[in-house]
Image 1 (cartoon, helix red, strand yellow):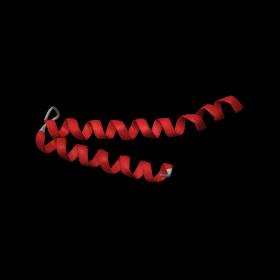
Image 2 (cartoon, helix red, strand yellow; image 1 turned 90 degrees about the vertical axis):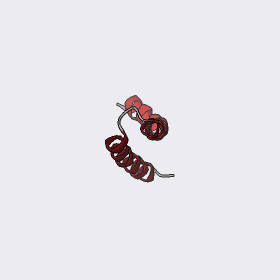
Image 3 (cartoon, one colour; image 1 turned 135 degrees about the vertical axis):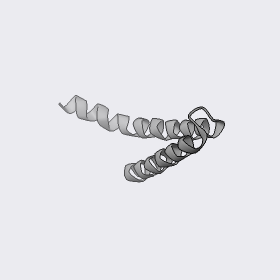
Image 4 (cartoon, helix red, strand yellow; image 1 turned 90 degrees about the horizontal axis):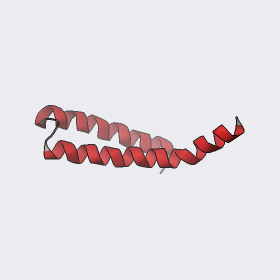
Length: 60
């Protein structure tokens, strides 16, 4: 999956989470589930980007 595709999925999940929170409250089970899913996606994005970030810093 490309970085751009992952960003699109993250943005979609973030929008879904906002809708769920507005309808069900911040601490509802479904809100927590969506929040955890978003956390997983964000963690994946950071892990995928870390080698590139590390290389850029080494070149600076």
